[in-house]
Image (cartoon, rainbow, N blue to C red):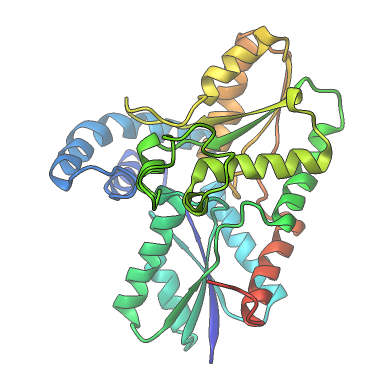
Length: 342
């Protein structure tokens, strides 16, 4: 059996031009797992209300992070692919859930290697319908369209994987060496209704007291629980006391309630709690992108300092760190050796 590896990440616009950003936003927001409302409502909302007004602002933000090589997220994912290719004896391709190179093009590139089984690694540590789930569903559609006889094997979320936690720690260690008052773990936000939508019991997430702390089958699909678990594994391993860290959620959209507390509000609040030397990191992202570089690194620092903060240290994402490539290599090895349970 001939096998191949597909890495799927979020994606970026093709350029910072308004037209390309509009195209990207329209594709992203038209995903029913992102904007989970009936299509007859979603389409006019996306095409007429959100995209025309959001695209120019987003284009300006992308211009701030764009490099001579292109989108930081795309460039980093390409480098990760190239490094993994040197480690394993299987073809490795990439695909983006939105934008280019598309997930379908990544599947086709593997089919060009005559594979009959694809190992998909969604580059999302935590399960959410708007990230991990939609990446899997998109890849399944591409395989069914292009080669329905090809088998698809999927890497489960790795939010509590010890090697992933160790990689996060190694990247963060240089930023934790000097004195600091607080570490803020900022995760990408999702609407509260998404938690309830992925709760197989339909009656647990956000409905039971301390739902994330009490063991339940829903945790396999609960983004918030998995974010808490990542943070606990990280802080336990480095011995960080509970008064020295907290969790927040960023990048909310619309008026519906999203997971709280909100990162921007925390950055305004922490200095008043005498947390003036801050280390901030975003474990839900494996690649630096608009949300980490611009939202946290630029806007976040400005908000924190304006609120009375003194020092602001942003920990980079895993990007192409050798320990992260080690993790991906081990995922593939486990898959090849049959140690992966899907």
